[in-house]
Length: 446
Image 1 (cartoon, rainbow, N blue to C red):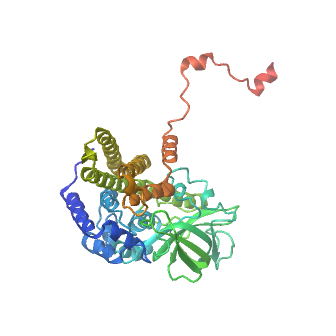
Image 2: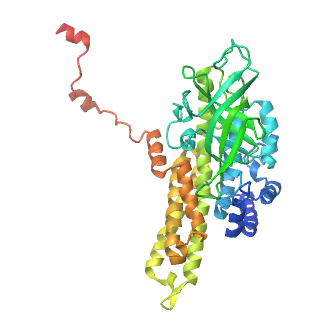
């Protein structure tokens, strides 16, 4: 593994840090987050034009920069440092990879260039507070109960114009369209995104399948509202779908023919099980990439929170000397520095090996929470005022754990997936000495 950055990556980081340093002070961040859109549209367009930020990981054939998710993670370390309110996470990290993996050639050609240029923003709508489960970060997403499981709740999809009221099969007449009904809360940028990717169930309980549907912002029957959240820089919306017309993402079998995310994603060959598995596998692959990007973003936020705290203790005087000169304060800051650097190493390793994304995310979220909390403590009385900028980082840490964690579940699922708690294989001696249960024929012989 070579952790050194290329000249292009260093230039991207330098340019992004320079732009955000001028436009994303604490007051500017709060003002942008409190607009109707939840972000500074002018700044978003500037980042799209100058750096191609929304299309960093989109292929060049679709108007993107053609870089890897690792480059997107490095960029998000800088946006995390500034706590930039933007559609970047919802659009480039969650929505674009799913369209690439599952969309048809026509869908990719129509949507990805607009997403890469910043003209169109997108949001992933997952029923219930189950985004982490849907992305397979804190649990296995294959059962599908998190999306309603075909029962009441979640979002239900109904095919229009087919001879079957359930999910159409190759022998059914192709549906003329789809209709969605249900409600989804806690959708990142769901109140302002021009395109929604809605996870819905179709086929009823007996033949339930989880599929992805495209819903435009002007679709009839779509009702959206912004929710009040702990972290203003992560705007969320509530979506109500009242018999809303939608377009299936992918082919009629639900698998699409996209390029995939990783190995074997988006290459299903039809059939209910393959279609369902293709969507769920694509969500899991997107989750691994998203975990890497979020880990880098959290590391950037933790590093900046630590830098602001160090700057404050150097200037704040008590008993005639700067409080940063006291040994107890130095020890606390040194512990925070080690924690942040360890999280950064984990995030960079996950950028090289996305399979380690969930573990890196757990370490980064913990580092951000501890660093932000210690920053509030070391700021003293002023740090406990709700309006102080130190709380922006603490709110980001708490909100990200609510959305993508918590930390202990991220680690538990990673350990379970790696087989850490699997029973050890029995040795030859144990096999020889352990009595076996007699079979039915042996019992009958006795």
